[in-house]
Length: 248
Ligand SMILES: Cc1cc2nc3c(=O)[nH]c(=O)nc-3n(C[C@H](O)[C@H](O)[C@H](O)COP(=O)(O)OP(=O)(O)OC[C@H]3O[C@@H](n4cnc5c(N)ncnc54)[C@H](O)[C@@H]3O)c2cc1C
Image (tube, rainbow, N blue to C red; front, side, top):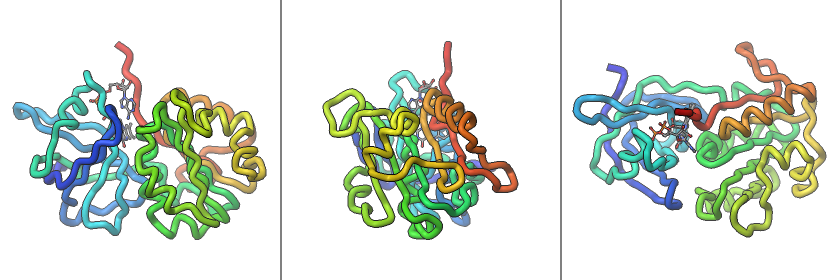
């Protein structure tokens, strides 16, 4: 059986449409920080499961996830209702392309996240090893409302010589209001952070965003001499879909 029965230990709402959950961690369940795993709920004997990036690190005893609540979503309309003591099923095989194995050491590591695309980067920035290969790690998180800036306090507490946190809010008044992809492409991100513009020879990029932001960034990076990391680990950017859009 690839799905392992786990217990909810904590639920934390961030905004009307985002929340985090903590689960017990299956015995022997190992993963690399930045990976995702499929989790689900059973309803009437049927398992409804979806991919979720792991927010927690491999050295913590529990598993933590950051979730969207899609009111008509098959899984999240139910997942939003779970409470401590309830069961969530966790697949035994985590995987993913947002790990340190997918970025060579370099000057600056840019992590560009939209919405719940923050999740894998939480796991990475909670791990001191992530900072050892770079002069600076810059995490940009764009969301629509201030309340959707999940983990903001924790991220602000990590800011220092080697870590910069750039929150951006697009639909409410806020200091920085550009989508992270637009800010990267226009150069506003570099003016805002007072860092030199990113170059493929010096810097690295990790993307976890909505399908439009991933498409837009991929196109820009490919057109500007960046190369996506291949299966041998060579390249200077890597990405994961934060979700897949279904059009009916
Ligand atoms: C590799 C990977 C990692 C993922 N990691 C996460 C994660 O860490 N947290 C998370 O909440 N989701 C994540 N997702 C999305 C997740 O798998 C589900 O799509 C989400 O839980 C909604 O499930 P659902 O059954 O309620 O709705 P679905 O039927 O799956 O989706 C309905 C619609 O909701 C929208 N949608 C789905 N997910 C999101 C989202 N995260 N943000 C904004 N809109 C969305 C899309 O338009 C989609 O068409 C990931 C997806 C992939 C492919």
